[in-house]
Image 1 (cartoon, chains in turn purple, cyan):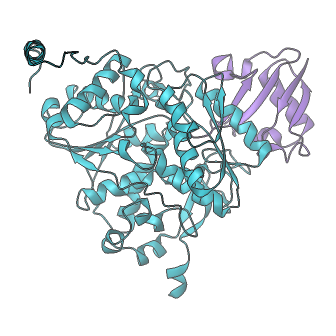
Image 2 (tube, chains in turn purple, brown):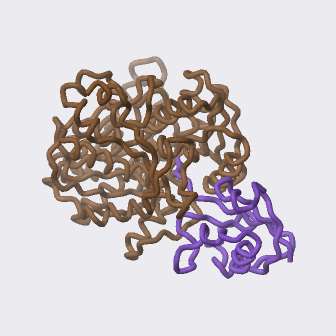
Image 3 (tube, one colour):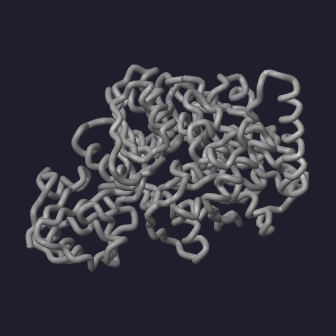
Length: 91
Length: 428
């Protein structure tokens, strides 16, 4: 199931400066694994020592925060768009 | 010695989580290690050597009297931002049952009547130093007003992003400065996500994204000013609104820095935060004893603080707990009552965020979580004329009369009986 992943600038050093990559994965968890096999070292940026997604990182599937879906277990379907966005301050 | 006096105390950036160092460039996350937020590092020895109460008092009546504590290297963009009134609120204090209450009124900040002028003055000064010609932001309204206005003054190009459902006053108050304004179909968190992607591709200075470490430092001046205006003393308790949590943590940092360089004597200060029930991810975590934030979808009239995914939430939680403060949430109805209470007792018309702060202040006093003898400062961060919709249906109406004495007399009679009815239900 190919999904599109939008890569933020700080992580494009792992992806040969590509802003978008297409990968096969059926869940967010599987996507993290797929990113690591294609781009070794990538998952260390996404996950802490215990393998959990870092708290200052937001992951969206088709514009919805995965914390409103099923977190790492959120399923992915053909053509889904996943974006990885570091948290920003507001107002 | 000469070099200490001329060099800027700005040394670089550092990850707030893991401490990894970075140069003082336009970057906001620890992308080499842990994705934590970056913070500015200063040479406090240099600051201590060149500042005193007297040197600050001799400075301009703006945030730039504290320029040695702000992350810039050259001349600031000074549009008169800061040094807003600290009002002793005796009538509100009596109504609530407090003895020493102050209102820090950033609803009259310059140039756009909210605390955001502080952060934007710093961010655009730094943006210019870093060579940006276009500045941008994701905003719930106040930040858009401020970025557009100060960019206009500085002659910078400006493109700002807001949720499409903002109050009319905030949209007009941005467009008047003639920036490019993008009204995004979605809530603030979605706007922010879009802006993170635009920041990746357009090479603009986003005040709250790639300039965030500099931007957020501007809020420290709300801490410095309160100390100076209290006669170089710390208060006992502060109450401030919580949106992303950044303001709250920076007031704390402002207090800590003045203690560190010897400008004020150390004493405990309790930090309490205010949220609207319709967007209260930090208050919920506080109540449930969690140290992580679960994002929410905002639904409240307090749009300026409607951030469902607060980036500095974990730090705000930590400060409230560590200092013996509280974080509480209030309903939209209580927020409107808070706006009216502040206006009627102190002559200060605040927007919904300020109504939230006053309503939470009242709640904490009622629950015994603020000691009546504490010197308490409530931070009012924005102006009520920007969100008139919020109170339009909850206030009185004018008496429509003819230009004749008898018409006035009969209306006056009605007005007085209405007022008597109100007095019967109110103490003061």
